[in-house]
Length: 260
Ligand code: PGA
Image 1 (cartoon, helix red, strand yellow):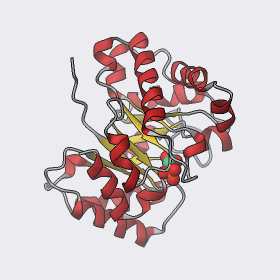
Image 2 (cartoon, rainbow, N blue to C red):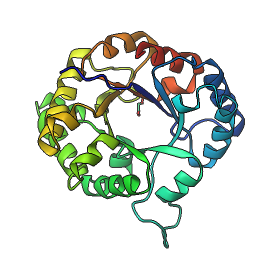
Image 3 (cartoon, rainbow, N blue to C red):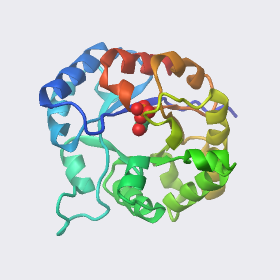
């Protein structure tokens, strides 16, 4: 059975832009994202600009509000407490977020996040009503040692362990080979499709074929308007998580269009 999954393209702004540029970018995207687009766009600005970007997106509300959403780049797994510098899931919801990126490779490598951390955060995000975008992906040396499948399988089972089967429909998985992030070296559509199919197979064993068939699996790593069409043509690639190219409205919208 062919299941039609709604496509999603998320922009991870990372630690870039200032308030004025964030608002200008969000307004530009909001006004140009076609009313009739079947693609959901998620903007993930730095936390301090989330509300300003939300207000900028509000300009287009009633127009394509349901196709344009806010997300955060990270969160803490606990609800509150003495965790200086951290932000909880409910706080993100309070600021208008519907999505949160979890376990990005930069968090895993620079801030020592483990699969167990990502698992705890995923559960906390779901409990707060957020849609987690859970990132996995192998390092270059792991791919070169033919260990991609093993690494990705460990990340998927570890990061998503203990979730009730029904909750799998509420998550998005991002496959982001670390060697492709910010390097301009994109995975070939075939390489990406292979891993996406592997991930979907793992999700079948963790939930059911029916549920796994509904999970959006997006690709990330040097996605640009000129490689997005080929990626979008793959059966298990349901959208993109975009870093660098999400900072330019024209490029980002070009990518979203490819998934239409
Ligand atoms: P990139 O980043 O598009 O700049 O490669 C992707 C990401 O980090 O999510």
